[in-house]
Image 1 (spheres, rainbow, N blue to C red):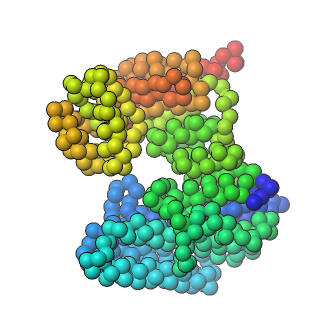
Image 2: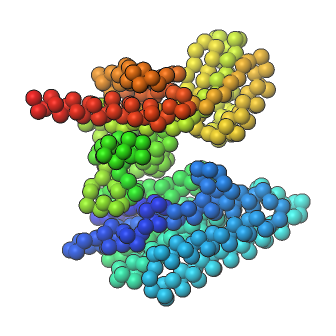
Image 3: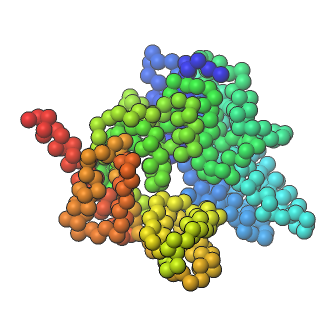
Length: 478
């Protein structure tokens, strides 16, 4: 579709809430630089998708959850009205011209009223016994998701047009479209007739398609849309603009002065980060870019002159830990004395975890015990626990809240990461419950008590990254 004369760039929700700050730097660029040759894929303004679906961190119910759980319309209707107010507040902070504000208000009114009518009709239809609401909830989730991205893309387009840029609103949300099309066709149809050299497409991060992005990727859909668009158009680079640099640790834990920007890494490291919940990019999106041979760059949107971090298939680079990150986990342990030499236990556990959509971070086993370290709520893991208790009545099933801190790098060969990490944690008075290292030498995982997550991250970051940098600088100076 293209000869690699453009870039595909994504702006996340937190950065979109500050898109006014980005207008004259990231979007329009400095004087003498053309603003064109770029396709922007945008997420909803910060917090909007939480209100539409559910809060990503707390699980607080949004419109979707309230509609699914309530027999009457009052709860979800109030929540939908709250979304409309939040959308108006969001574009009120971005747009200056009264005509643009009025146009954005009309857009919100039309979309919210359309969604309200659709939900009312569905609720009325499902009052008849032949129709079950549960059969339609995934479609409802898709419908609601598209509202946020449609709004932010439309508002960003108005803002750029007012600034004199030839911006084009590309709505992939399928709003009032007839029939399902594939994701590829949805993207190609949306971009048809656009000259990237003279226009700036601003594309919704949600794309309605026959495959159903929400069913497969849930809230990772915007990065999948971004990656698929890049795979189809073959840009020079795919770029994700975040509100921070991809760094050696979370600055909130080790301090802004303590982190080191990665600069360059590979998709293998990106996969490990995704596994640990610190997504540089959704793993499915990374796969699409890798297979299409499109390099990915992660930048700080508010430092447009900084090249950020390039992620590609490179295996080179100096051996060493590049990033230390951690997350809360639950250890699900299945002990069965009769497990020795018998096949099928692991498959049964995996089946239960998959059915309840529990993310597996790591696992370990011995003769009669299998332990899965998972990223999920205690409520979800308890459901798995109950199912396994019925399946293995003579077994002992235990669950425990813990923390996992992982040291990750393209090449950890000869770095003694495991032994150095264990010594550093012991010196800091932090107990290590378990640790894992694979022969591929790309990550080492330390399982700690739940309350030691932050302290463990700081200790390992200092030992494996900061002290290593200081030692290398000392040797080079000598």
